[in-house]
Length: 242
Length: 101
Image (spheres, rainbow over the protein chains, first blue to last red):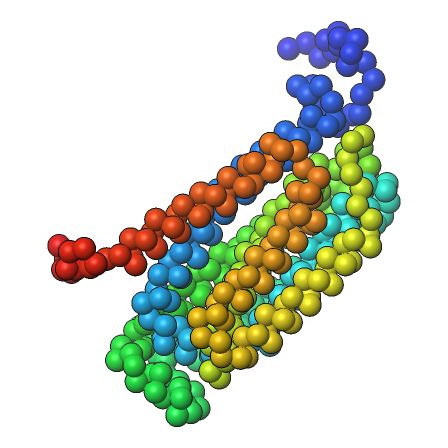
């Protein structure tokens, strides 16, 4: 192809450099991106939804094992992580706000803060995983589960399920799959944020165009929503019987 | 540009509400309410998710097409849960349940 530019129709004469030629306007371009991102998020809803459904069925079948296994998790670390993740959603939305008010340095600051909080979450999660490995709570050949410091009430609960250890391993399988896939989503999100930091630093985003920030925000907040459900369902179901 | 710019104050208020609800879900979990524990926990989680959707994900200012797409995701999720749980809840009620058949 010749490098000579084609003659542009007059209506395309003066537009924002980020406006792709197939769109009539910036609004139309943004609407297209948003719709596409939401279609992807719908597939993500179904993807995580199946795991939540599996959890619901097994928990209904083995309520005692799920309650007792849940009590072995560190609620404090899980709670701190919930706060960290909600904080990262705040900084993410503030990065978009910074773009909307044309504060380019602010975009970089808030994106870096979001990455930092996301990394904090993963580090805390790593410590929790480490504890589970040490306690032999990872399903597999070395899996072992028994109720720690059993009170009379907890012993009564444990006695109701003759295959407690086997059923507790189902809980821990779901725990590792659900939190693991959630963590994988965060690692991917942090990677995307790193690219956005570089592009924001180069001044690619302003009030008129910041679609990649907005789309990454949708993804990041969705991952936050998944955790909002994981926290009570995995960490808090047995708190009243502790 | 038609894009709506939400003030920072709104975002900080939503963040505060999410934190308060997180503490609330932890507090309620300490009390034994029987089956109501799950109802309260899920109720709070749905409220938090709705706040994130409406404010952080800007669904409040999205077009109807986008809202419809988002709602359809949760609608299909409800079908998935509804039919599967109906199956598990009704097994053995009409004909005796024989494992392996």
